[in-house]
Structures are given as structure tokens and as C-alpha cells.
Length: 277
Image (cartoon, rainbow, N blue to C red):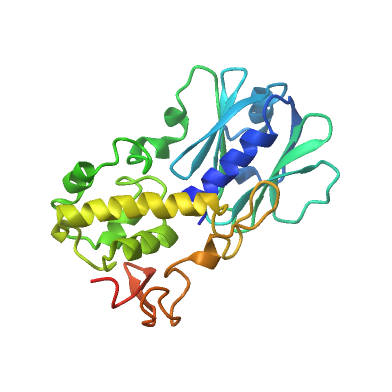
């Protein structure tokens, strides 16, 4: 958490609010938030006076293109938040970095667990050479590459549970615990099903379900179960319509059977024992 819909929600908000305004400086309140460079002075030297042309999302990463040719990378990890606020707004103790943008705004990075990271990408360097996690990402769920044939190829020799496969960012980028559970429910597949045992028809249902639940959540502004907020501080609303995630012991919205919650590969999995075979 946050997963693809939450990061996409943040990305869209950043593109609406932060573009074209010069970065006037800021403050690093926790040095280990900087993944690159390690020097705080080098970080400010690289970005001060530049402005953001565009934000984009890759998996659960955010990438900002600067007018200098450089860039910024952000990974929110478990509890990270990017908030667009007036500069004089008091900041909480979990604020890790502040970017002063324009005359009176700031982009504030707040992170309770301190796992989130920010990178500066120098001009003429590919983001993946600095943010090495990008090199391993699988296809994007909304891309043309994400096809039934792609899933068949990736899963044909896998004895892992399908839930574990969906959480693997090297297979599909951006899916986490919430939307793996939701997509498996929509496709009628139990989370502990062996990946290589799924038929082509099941894989196509799963592919469509993944895209459907992700798009539905994006339309709802993501999911807020604990820490996620949009850049303007608004909770996501997908949790109120979730099919199974977070609903252990409650009635299935389709058949009325109680939703079960089990541990699978160290993670919780929620499913309907009647709707998912």
C-alpha cells in the first residue's frame, strides 16, 4: 500500500497542481529519505530553479520530468504521502522532505514508517540507471503487452499460488494485496490456485478483472484503509465498494456466503469460498 490506483491518483493530482512552477528550494528533514544522491547539497543543486514539466507513473513509482532534462523519482512504499499545501501550513512530525514550489506552495513528503524514497535523476541519465528497481518491473496492466498470451507464458511453469504471482512486480507492475484479492474474486479464482493450472479462459477472465478493478479504484480515487491520501489530502473511496478485501467474516456481496481470510505466503488473502472455485 499504496498500489497502482493510489499512485495513479497521486500522479494525476500532481499533474493538475504542480507543473510549470519553479522549485525554490526546500528542506530535507530525514536524510535517508534521499535514495540518490546521498548528498543533500547535491540534491538541492540539481533541482533548485527547475520546474516540473510532467509526472508519470511506472508500477508503484512516480517520475517527474524537469525542464532541465533531469528528473525526480518517488516511491511511497507503505505509508508515504505527497501533499500539496500552502507553505505556512504547520507540518507534522512525520514530514520527511519539503519542496518549495512557486511563491507560496510546497510539495510535502510525509512518511510515518520512513520506507519511502526520493531520487534526483541528473540530465541525460535514464531513470532506471538511478532507480534500479525500474529495471525489474513487469508489464503495465493497461498496456497492450498485458495479454492472455503474456500471462500464459509467465505462468506456464509456475507452481506458486496465483495470489503470489500477482504480487510479483516482475510479472505485472503495480498490483498489491488489495487488488490481487479483488481481481481474483471478480474472475472466480481462489487465491491459492496453482498458477500453471489455470486455463486460457481463466487467464483471460483474470486479465479483464485486473483491469476492471484497477480502473474502478482509480475512478474512486484509490483505497484508504490506513494512511493513503490524495495530494490534496482526500481519502480514497474504493474501500466502500470492495468485493472481498478487508471484508473477512462479512457476507459476500454476490452470494451471501461469509468472506474468508487466510494467510498465504505471509500475506492475508480474502476470498468467497462459493464464488471462487
